[in-house]
Amino acid sequence: MTNTYDIPNTHADHAANQGEGRLLIFSAPSGSGKSTIVKWLMEQHPELRLAFSVSATTRAPRGTERNGVEYLFLTEQEFRKKIADGEFLEHEEVYPGRFYGTLKEQVETQCQRGENVVFDVDVKGGCNIKQYYGDRALSIFIQPPSVEELRRRLEGRATDAPEVIEQRLAKASYELTFAPRFDHIVVNDDLDTAEAEAYRLVSQFLKR
Image 1 (cartoon, rainbow, N blue to C red):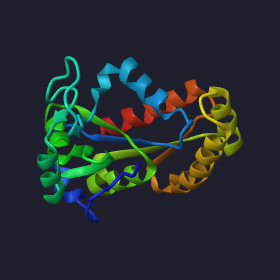
Image 2 (image 1 turned 90 degrees about the vertical axis):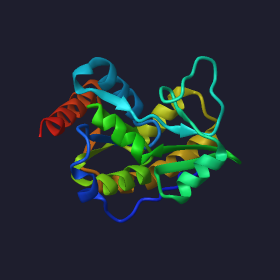
Image 3 (image 1 turned 135 degrees about the vertical axis):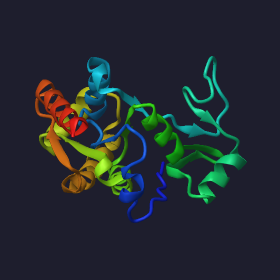
Image 4 (image 1 turned 60 degrees about the horizontal axis):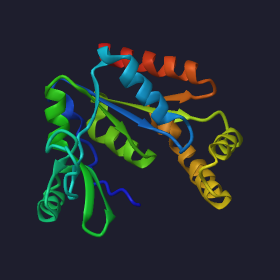
């Protein structure tokens, strides 16, 4: 699965004064605890007004899903036109004709409602979104104490075959090289400590 980013070199000035909310970018190698930390922030600290961006997709609604709530539902033709017009912050084609993506306009709409929009993305996506939004975004890299500890965690999950774990570790070693490009690195050695540090960084940023 490959993310495709169509982000120009810099849009910091363009984005600086639009909307009220800000952008919070979280990236990490698989198994670092990123999603656990993000979930904790969103559930335990409603005062931060955190909200995931509402993605666009070409798949049909399921069950009680509503347009503009769970997803923005587009036809493949509409989605492809928005790609061509440069309207996506990021997008990916998961299967032929099955697209998912984040519309720049949707992020602005959420920010204008006062929401602080959260991105839980891969390291390249995190770097590109930060580059697009500049000082309006805070980028945090959640880092495992070591690759050895990451191996222990992945093996402890007992959800992946040994060869899959090796692939994840190889990818993690590569992703760790991106850490210095983020605003802050939070080492998740102890979950409670990492959560507290992430909260401190986010709170500080939102008060600026």
